[in-house]
Image (cartoon, rainbow, N blue to C red; front, side):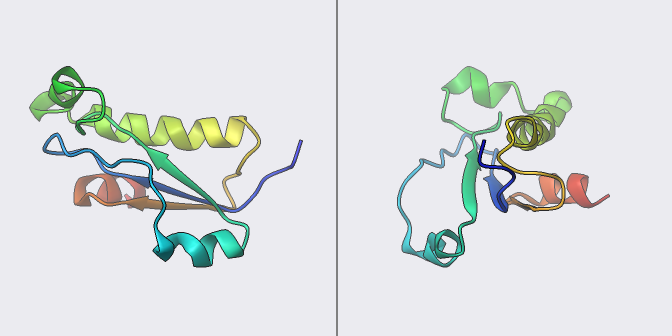
Length: 101
């Protein structure tokens, strides 16, 4: 077990947009500081097709928040991160409001 590592969790889930896992040089400062960068594919995005998007519209929008929180909890349960070392980056105003409320 490597113990908890500072973790930056990013998620976006709206309009059926897909955020593919890929290399970005803008993440290098985090990686050089030994920060784990995790990408949450939450419902509302297009990663899993149209049904995945539809499961986070209107009255089911809360699924987007639940998915993001579930990924954060999994990272803690896995021992990758802990509540004190997480940075949450929800690139959707509604997720951000839910996390900071």
